[in-house]
Length: 75
Image 1 (cartoon, helix red, strand yellow):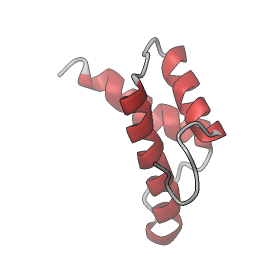
Image 2 (cartoon, helix red, strand yellow):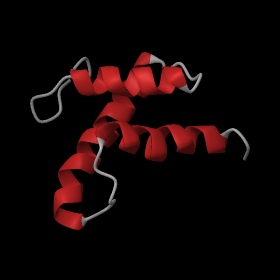
Image 3 (cartoon, helix red, strand yellow):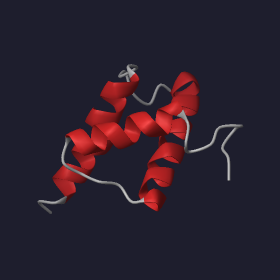
Image 4 (cartoon, helix red, strand yellow):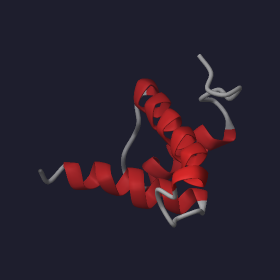
């Protein structure tokens, strides 16, 4: 499966995987794929809809995805 010509084994997916690992979270392959699609969609739509002011890819991953998962552990 690919998303706009990109596969989840791309550099972006590797970055997502490594940032989750730094936070002590290991993603299953399906979870990584879903965060990859989320990331690609956010990047694509952010240009049109101004969804977030955070532009740095690592900051997007940490502040939107990793922080959300970590916070969910307390709910």
